[in-house]
Image (cartoon, rainbow, N blue to C red):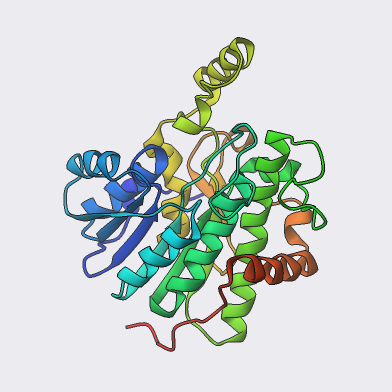
Length: 299
């Protein structure tokens, strides 16, 4: 198997890349490595101070802009202000297993941030995207189900991990349906997905949870997790490698926890085309955004 490392990134001069959640973790590593290869990178972050601090550690052409994926008004403002062509959009930001919380629009926080916020952002930016949309999912999607009767956990007892798994499954269904629509429209843009394996990021530091869970999480991180830079490699692979649409990249090692990136499998639920279409329809209604690909050809 051919390995992929940061040195395999091609020159990115003349390319504009938007990375959500680029102030920390694999998002910051992704942005830094792309900028080092010559890309103009827009760090789309909720906290401008943290974003600027992250940008200060990067070389190359980087810009920090505010984006709160848990607020559709912020998503719309970000998209309206970013008027230039975009080569690659990397939907990286995410939240993991918080207590029950709601977005500004009333969505369950994990679905609202991890899926609906990125869904709206992609649709709003799509007329300007020229090459690829990469969405970061998780191996945790395998535990997920889409409860179309109660997507936002308004009636059933809340399970934080169940909500997280649902949102990560939604990422893969979104990618599949986005690619189907792009192909049908004759667009050259590709939709791909990736998961980082187990990376020692803020998502794996559940300080708000009990002592036993914190201890177990830290033990698992110490045993299996890889660095942020290594965790970013599947995302970079999905962003630049010669891959088919709807490709899904992840680590090649044990339990896909770490290792060089490769194409990986997904659950049967993540391959349900009808569920993908229905989720898209509902997501359009919830976000009031629609699919509008760019009428362009690659340079």
